[in-house]
Amino acid sequence: MNIPVTPGDLLAIGPISVMFAGALVVLLAESIFRNGEAWNRWLALAGFLAAGTVAFLNTGWSGVAFGGTVATGGFANYCAIVYASAGALSVLLSTDYLRKTGIAFGEYYALLMIAVLGMMLMGAALDLVVFFLGLETMSIAFYVLAAFARSQGTSNESGLKYFLLGAFATGFLLYGIALVYGTTGTTSIPLIRDKAPSLIGTPVFTIGLALILIGLLFKIAAVPFHMWAPDVYEGAPTPVSGFMATGGKAAAFAAFLVLFRPEVLGGEKGLRDVIAVVAAASMIFGNVVAIAQSSIKRMLAYSSIAHAGYILVGVVAANATGANGVLFYLMAYTVMNIGAFGVLAMVENGAGENLHFEDYAGLSAQAPVLSLMMALFMFSLAGVPPFAGFFGKYYVFAGAIQAGYTWLAIVGVLMSVVSAYYYLRLVVMMYFTAASASPRRVGKSSAGLLALGIAVAALVYLGLFPSTIIDVTSRFF
Picture: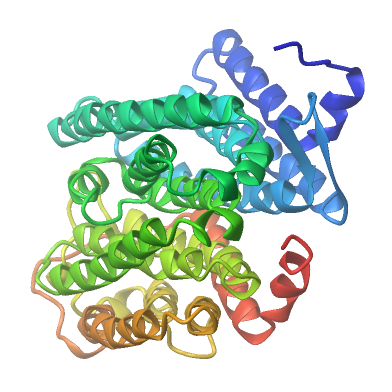
């Protein structure tokens, strides 16, 4: 396949080009400066801000580059803003955490940028080969980041589990791509969507889509491909857990919206119903099991499984309302979940303690600002109005009802009520439970507080003015 490449293509994919150049600069700085972790931190932050700014300035138009294999502007740039935001917040939240845990190495920030580079490729992919390239770029960086605390056995276990299960899921995905290519004769995603109505009922084509679906369900940690998430999130460095739970999930859902458009799901009714069952199972399993957790990181891991189910409801809807709801939910989920993991990272000490519910007893007296922020994140994750989490669920549920999946929306509402128990349990622990006799040291990081303040402001703003996002995303579908 001969793909024409022009200098204009590199400009057209501005956010990807900026992120690629930024990652190279950070790697170069790491090789030049001894103990250059501080240099890399600010270079990485500048790279994320630059990529996000370029994406923001070019969201109003859309096109293609590299012979129609990569999308530019519009949807791709919106996704790039989400990924760059996740990366920038993670850099700020990692500043103090890396020092106190003894893992302040400059390559950490290069890995964050490489992971976001892969996410951007996934969000902009109009070809299955480009999509797979982005997925593996992101995944390899995640495997290393999960095991970044190499002196801790739990972190090594986290990286190894993620690598082994991720490689297994990649096999399903790649085989599915091969089958789809065999039946359609192309790896172009728009051409596959155009040919999908005439291939409905073809066993090989349906099996190919199903195998691709399995690979994507693993990346979003949906039931029954969720088994890696609790152990990986618990063992990985806390800022990395928040980054994987948000940026990685957002990238996979961007692929869902590109691959499983209405013209595909509309004809493959069986596949659509399977996704609906997976969404319901994820919501039920994630919320019910989260109730029994004593570790907050594991609670948030099972919570992420439930949120994968909520967002899948918008995919099942296969209409504009559902797709807009998915994109809004991804932005809201990114800020509130990274914020929750960020508070954990600041309260956690260098020995990996202060990660259980009882460790947060009476925290409001010692750290009132952190406690207030954590309470707001919990309210938003639970879907309490007027925070962003409420409108995220509202839009995906509204899309499901329009598509005739009212039962799925009802399951989502009921499970949201269940989730309020374990989210509010943490709030009760911070404000209405006496502190333990043993002293607890809470880290003070100006960079971390800045990141948390930005996240709080974003979730409140998106909750009060949700149309800010919906007006933008409605042009994409």
